[in-house]
Length: 171
Image 1 (cartoon, rainbow, N blue to C red):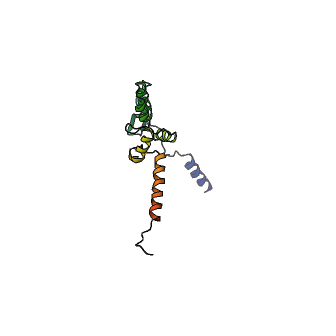
Image 2 (tube, helix red, strand yellow; image 1 turned 45 degrees about the horizontal axis):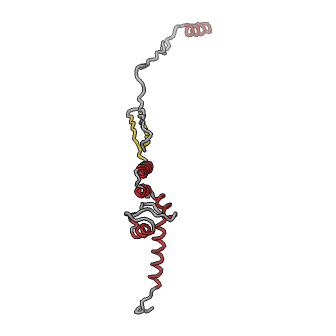
Image 3 (spheres, one colour; image 1 turned 30 degrees about the vertical axis):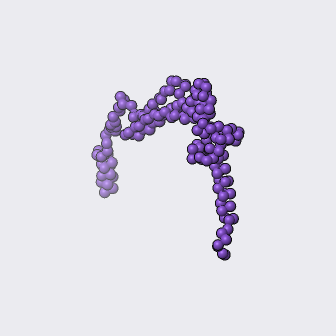
C-alpha cells in the first residue's frame, strides 16, 4: 500500500499542470509627437517713443482647455502735466504753466506753504489765496493746506455759536 501511495504522489508531482496566467506582457500606448501643449503667451507691448507718458503691461494665463493673453498701456498723468507745463513755459505763458502744475495737490500745497498760492482765475498772490479760500471746491482733491484752514475756521465758528446764549432761554 505504501508503494501505491508513493506512486500516486509521484504521478501527481510529475504530471503536467495548466497554469492560468498571462503568457505575454503587452503594453499599449500612443505617443503624439507633433502636438505642443497649449500655451498662452503674453504679448509684448512696445512703446518706441521715449517722449510718451505711457508704460506697458501684459499678462497671460493658460489652463488645459482655454488660454487668455492681453496687454495694455497705462497713461502717466503726472508726466503729461509736467510736459504740458514745460510747453506752456517755453511759449512764455508762465502763469498758465504754474496753473497746470497746481492741478497736482502736492504742488498746490507746496505753493500755499511757500507763500505763493496757485493762480485762481487770473488772480495771483493774496488775491488768489482769498479766492481759493472762498472756493475750496475748485481746489484739487487731496490738497491739505486749505482744508486745515477750513476745518480750523469751522471749529472756531462752532465754538462761537455754542458760546452765544439766547437771553430768552432759561435753564
